[in-house]
Image (cartoon, rainbow, N blue to C red; front, side, top):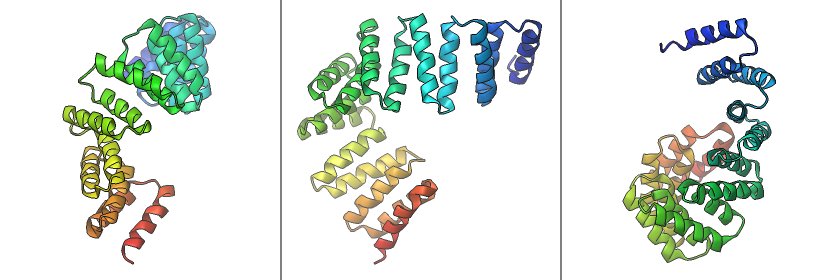
Length: 273
């Protein structure tokens, strides 16, 4: 009936009547998660797992809550338990790979992606994740093969073009990198990540005007991103466009977390020397 508070109350009554009703516990946990009550959601899922330890979906759901609480270890462990119970869910392997990358376990993440692609060989998301992971560990030819396959499967995907362009850039094939970045931006002219990487290429080649243009477009496409505005300000300062640089750096300063403000303030002071 669209009344979350009422639904939580109704599930609470069901749980009071039957404390071993894992389905009701799981549903109440989902509602509590939507309301931002992470502790309540996790408590319900802890209880549901005590009642039904073999329920893979409950393990996966608790992993989501643990991730939102910043407990990567618990999230990875719960996804692992879910995968042991149901080993043929490619999306769960993808989810654990993402968490393992975040935790610094690149080898484990790549193993999960290999397994996911064994189940769904044409999953563009998994192929791109593996290309990124392989690039990160220096397996550039394998990364390029993955990126080529992703572009073949999804030629209109700007992300596939961006990742292949990034692999080319890491391999120092600047012409191929630029071609892929241009293609990504033809598909999606507001794709901020592609604009940032192309700006880096332009800056490295001495095209400060082009780099500044790309970073300005990226800033317009990313309203709350202070780092893009900082990069924009730095490039504008290098180009001698001090007034525009000051405006971009002030925008970065307004958005940046407190710990990141001092270096931006130093750059602003340097403009006035």
